[in-house]
Image (cartoon, rainbow, N blue to C red; front, side, top):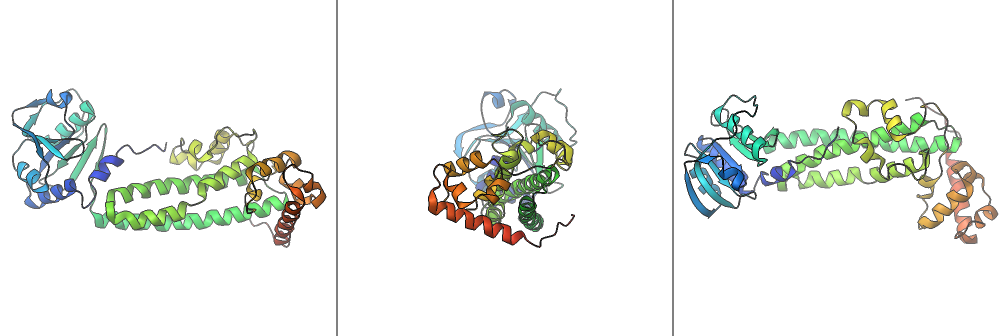
Length: 353
């Protein structure tokens, strides 16, 4: 199941160039290791023993790195702007299960689970940084590794985005030829959902890269432009019930695991699209959305009057003029659009995927 990544805030705080990340880089270079708790309150105070209070000393990378030379934990506020305690021995509930082996990592996982506070462990021996957030954990990756993986994912996303554009063109041809089946709709929405899922992963990379991820973020915005809107229009055209059960079908599909996302039958059942090979007709919303400056109210009136795209494609100027809000000039504009659409589809042959 695709879920919102609740670690984004901590990933943002640990992005390259941030004070906390600079402190961690210093600790790695001095090879001392560290256990840093981000957040202070009664829950943390209850499991602290020893160490000393700093009375809210200002956070600084060098200051944190110096405090990390001592064996105990360092406790800051959630934003890593103030240091409250240092050289603290943490005693979380020992009954909390953990698969970690090192003392720091076992303590960090238990503290994160017990308090919900993010805990950062800098490993002295392995030269790695592990972040525990609740029951989840992730390893902080180097900017070089992140950029390489992000660029690879961008290439994958570009390939899928091109294929979605081809799918939409093919769907248009099928609609004009009146040979659409539910499988065509499911496959389009599957690909759109997969694109958004890859995009979500890339957004995480961009967040984790901080300022270095800005170019990736801009490319991502460009590649995702129009994907959600196209999915909404396609679903509005083919949902058995109208208005459909979900205003945004991709939000509904996001509840599926990656494995189930590839299962056409499960996607069709979730969206209530009916048997896969059943022929269906578009209502016409997606085609009408392509007409410049056509008000939404007029689109609704046209679909309500004619019922489906096939009726719209064969309507005369006089028929179109009868619809409320259309008028003679707009009726001629619509007729010219439909004529071009039909002409562009002549001689087209259906190709199997």
